[in-house]
Length: 120
Image 1 (cartoon, rainbow, N blue to C red):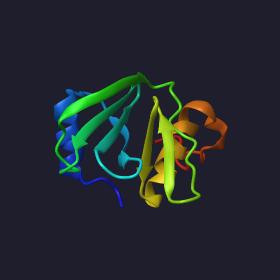
Image 2 (image 1 turned 135 degrees about the vertical axis):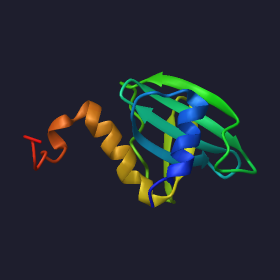
Image 3 (image 1 turned 180 degrees about the horizontal axis):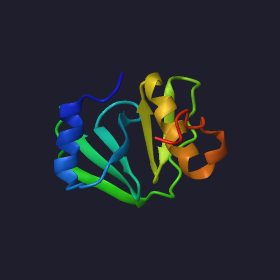
């Protein structure tokens, strides 16, 4: 399920982003607890914490990283999880493709599908 438009706008306003959000997905700390939102732009990966009680209200910026930072790989043994910047996170299975696409865009561009309408 895509991240709803109002949450995208909330994150954009919270971070002061003028450009495009390329990818966005929710996560939580491994084993439960705090919620997070990963916001990926052309030049930055921002990780916002939402606290334990809300999954949609940004509280603070957990960290900011250059776009060249790898997010995955995602482990899928007991649910989907990944390690990023020293933290371990869980995600819903539907967001595995988002992380894989975000990483492929930087690290393996040849694996991305070709633009079906390159002249537009």
